[in-house]
Length: 244
Image (cartoon, rainbow, N blue to C red; front, side):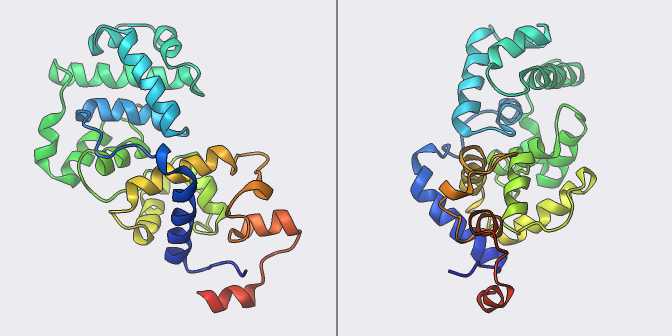
């Protein structure tokens, strides 16, 4: 079967295939979490799966009395609650930093007023919490809480999209908004939350960083990287052109 080159068709096909594999692993959306908690969850969620992030978030909530106790705890204490998430220490530092900035600004742990400011203004406000809130975190909040159209792009998602041929240019961290625009153009708002979860599951299960398990991946016949890794040949550009 020739590889699909029309990006919208390709990602629709990818989502349909993965839905059959991972339907029960997709997180309920909306989650019902307040905005600040959604940001904290997003910090847990970046570059991991819904199940791993949810488990870590629940351990964090149960390990501390409230968000103020998290704020005044050490990085190692918060990281212990997040373990075994990868980069638990980095995530812990970001969570503490976010809570500290919000507390210093508001003397509370509520961001609910941002919902009334509109998507652009809310995103701009959230982006002010630099380092602790990344482009991924802001996009997650827009998608999951503010009911806007955004596709959060972490390293795992970018890796998958490059291998699928959706993103062909080099990844520049300074151009994340532009990269998101490319993906958001071909993934509709309604499909966004499920797409985000399914791609992260693909990245975790088969499309791993160093040694992708292309021979076991259900997309191996549709993905340019999968075709090359399993057959030793590049996809037929003439055949692909006919499908675009």
